[in-house]
Image 1: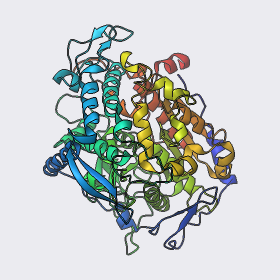
Image 2 (image 1 turned 135 degrees about the vertical axis):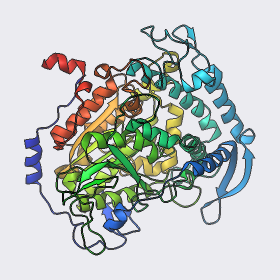
Image 3 (image 1 turned 90 degrees about the horizontal axis):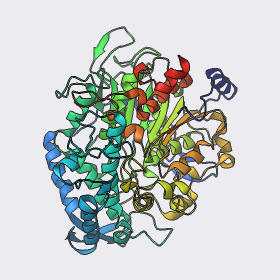
Image 4 (image 1 turned 90 degrees about the vertical axis):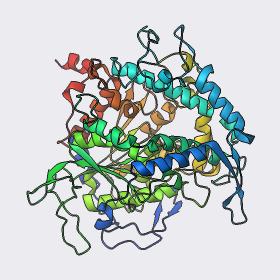
Length: 617
């Protein structure tokens, strides 16, 4: 499969940029506090801090957890998972704890029982005419090698053909992960609407009193954080990607990349994340030459114009166009309730750094689990993202910044671009925008199975995907409704384009067209978000959007499947030329090199799809 829309020619992009050149008003004197950005409808979004940070704050290292703190955090996560604290509104409209109960009792009981039944025994046991062990058993849970193969349409697949050690193709490994994830997702959402009812007042803003979506967000975030907090799992994942995990001789995707925690000026976390003063993670080349020609190693390269508080250039400044002089600013996926920047550091950031030779910043943002204030809800994340993006544009130059994101982070990235391209023109447009499975429509209508065909056709529980190995999305319908509610009130989600950028169409997006950057959007043909993503891809001006539909792809499959492209064990099984995930990344990297103009980007020739080889040889 080739991209459904061909990328625009570089000459066309240059002509548009020259014709529509403007000087963004952000540059010059630092903006006054309470700076106001407006969207096309002149709706105000106020930011409490100044947009401008010093370069020293921008590139300062942040804090990061260690193996000892991981033990403590894992215990804290278990406490949140196993105990339910009820919250009600106080006189100050904030939530206050009123009682704590075991997860096995009270309103959490149906949720806990449902999770156990669906996860351990009742869902999807009969697949391909073969019994599959419950995924809670030692083999099924970690999807290691076991005799349960011969499943699926080909008769050679199986849930235990895992991505860790088995000699299977990358597609078979990805289907194994898909099936296990489907079971977890369905189990965690089967009774979620009953246990955590959606608010009936459309004007009620989160956090919500108990029982409600905020309680659900706390449970899911604690579960996800527990996996991240497993002692020393983070350094193991990093070493796996850099090729020195010690289990095999594979080189890894990013042998020449390393990382550093980012300053808290660039991002922030909620209390459940246990991230401290870590604002995300920088991925950057291990070794580079600074502007003076000196070889530096293990330090974050900084762009040519970066200065300390005394106006002096940093020693780590590089020359224009050299490795480290450009940045990809990535908003990680989360559904507003799970995952952290640390996960995406090893999933894709190190890989993108390796292939482009430049810097990748995966920012951190708070999730919607807070019970006090507006810490993890709209527009907190957007305000933070606009500030960081504005500073990256200032110090790197807009032509050297790529704005990117996946899932909820993809929606956040698009909302950031809408702020940058607002009629007031406060911030310059980036060189390009890269979105993977962006979650852009949080309105109530987006979950309507009668009118949204992909919602009914691709949900794993509704269409019997759990009884058809290797099919359907990993996101369930019930969980989707709850996720939409945790971020903002129904009124905001249904009417505010900066909260739900998918509300825009060609007509309403027209005020932003003048400086819309070249954009790449990828999604899977088996996603429940397929319809909203394809509609969003058709809204910007023609000729500036390149799309790629991943065949048999589920939500963010190019990201989840990236570590599975190559064999993870010591035997055969790598065939990237026939991997849809490798195909997607081949097209993405080609777009970065040929359309955005980052000529130094390396596109793995061994990932060149077999169909391309056939048609061009």
